[in-house]
Amino acid sequence: MIFCDKRLFDQYMKKDTILRLMDEWSEAGDEEAPSQKWLRALPPKRMTFYFMYGDLLFPKKRVKVLDVGGNWSAFTRKLGEMHDYTILEIMDIPSIPFVKVVKHDWYEDFGTEEYDVIMANDIFPTNDQRLQLFIDRFLPRCREMRLSITWFTEPKFYKTMRVDGDEVMYLQAWDGSRVYVCLMEWVDRIIDADLDGLFKSRKSIFANGRQVCIAFLKGGLA
Image 1: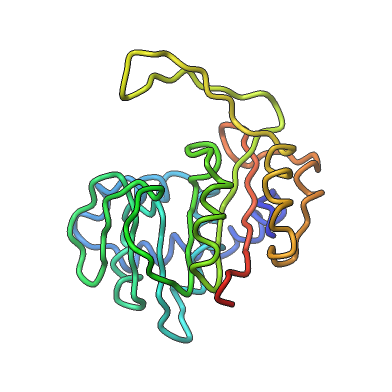
Image 2: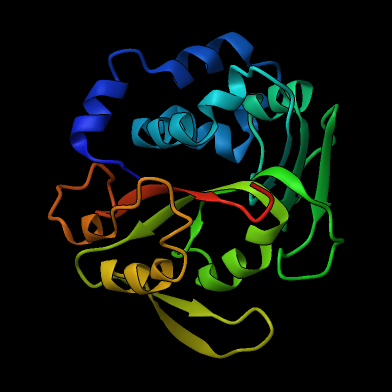
């Protein structure tokens, strides 16, 4: 597990590899991509992206990757060139050479393919609280799973509305204890697990006060 704290951020910013590569690899139209805009504007997101994707951008071998909620940026094209790369996403994504895009909620049935790496960056559990269901469904289908996981130390909630009705709902973001309970089921699968670190007091490097860690899990095919 990697905790995205200020010490790690300061170390990353000495080189800011993702910004350098984005400047080098971007082509016309890339700056309109939502993910590209976020990476441009938010250095902490670039750091998280680096630890999630960095080794895939400097690959020693070609691997089969499923990126859940991956959206798109200049890096999408490169990942498609370097790997057998599939994005599973509910949002519209333009056609990108060498990249397979499946427009589905991950919970829907879209086949039983197996992968070297299955990853979800900046999705769970703030945007999607079905973290336990996701791990249970996809961990058996990969050699490695990578998850960036978000939680808050102070109460955080959002006023929302159901898209299939007119019901207003309040969605409370997870705290460290809820993440702990969820991940404990797979603690023997988490590489360098440090679940107690979820309770450590850290000053957030993100504008909304969230805490982020990256968990690497040994998949069922490992």
